[in-house]
Amino acid sequence: MDVQKTTEKTIRDGGILAMLYFDLHAATKEAAQQLGTGFVDHLIKTPGVVYALGEIDEPLEGGEGKNCSTSIAVKILTKDFLTLAMLCMNNSPFSVEILRPDEIRLPLNQVHELLGTLAATTAEYKKYIVTKIAKPEEIAEFQRQLGIRAELGKKILEKKGEKRD
Image 1 (cartoon, rainbow, N blue to C red):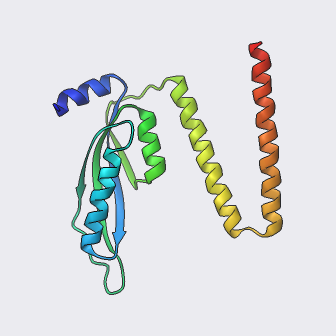
Image 2: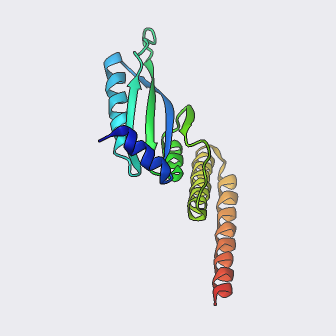
Image 3: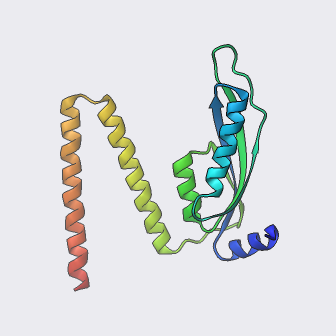
């Protein structure tokens, strides 16, 4: 594969070249390096990733009874912004730097999908947090609010259906 030609074509077609930075912790230096290698391999195999090249820093000893820590810098080319956004949501890099292009234009369908995914992810996090720390009556109120939200969503979809008819 000619990396430069592939990069140019992908960016022309809406792709994004970025640097993603991750931290990683493990019991030993070897385990940290193995986890880092496996993580980069996971990124490479993610649908929508054209290529990824990761550099794993030398793990630092955490002291007795503490984990080793390292960071991974990954240069990644994705077919579109949505793929990059999903990677960030699913893998939580501590920093993201978009290298190219200088400006990003998104088709409306990608904007809708991204916003829907952000909303669903946030709702899942809220649900998880509430069910772990809330009192039973707070959980019941949260469930009630989810029911209201579902009903409102149903009404919106019904209105959209009526407008199309």
